View (cartoon, rainbow, N blue to C red):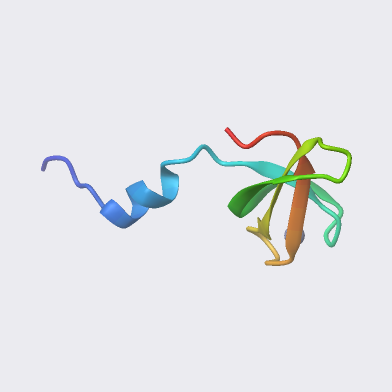
Length: 65
Ligand SMILES: [Zn+2]
């Protein structure tokens, strides 16, 4: 017994899960893997990454915490 710490797991979970709408699957609340903060042409913040479900690019408006 005792604490089992998987450092790989910890690293992956350091950031809160970011979710977005997957246009390929037409599903909401898909996990955005490797989220990156980007800026739109109009200056608004957005988050870009890879869909955790289908692996296609995924995107959402808003800031990455
Ligand atoms: Zn997807």
